Length: 180
Image (tube, rainbow, N blue to C red; front, side, top):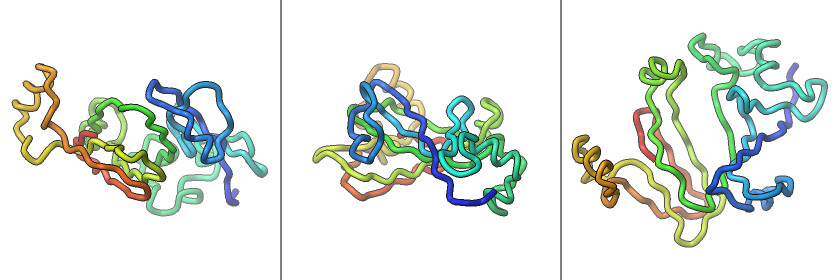
């Protein structure tokens, strides 16, 4: 069944969240909200359709019922995909520093997590005047032993590339072991 789906978001509350998602028309929620997952097939956090004859059905259920090709098109029909939808679309309100993450490539993710690697694209809708993101290791920091030793000693200065963030900019974190 194809028609424009309006999705019911799933809200995530993390310590670094804030109150700015209200400015995007999100409901007034109690406390800080870190993320609004607009479209998700992540188990336990699947978004549901909010309109039409498929109202209250998850995107995963709809893909199972009607088939990947009909819902997603020819490019997203690979049997290696273990989730119903290949993207996670979300708004983030990073009111404080986030944890540093390293996303695996497909090979590692398949072996360790029975999942796929993760490419991320961030589009900055708004940012405070001195906001920054950590986006990869510093050019001067390529030695894995030095990286490990610095982390074990709690010395993070100079390890990563910190970039000033401005409104209406974007960043791509490729699907390789990548730190952000």
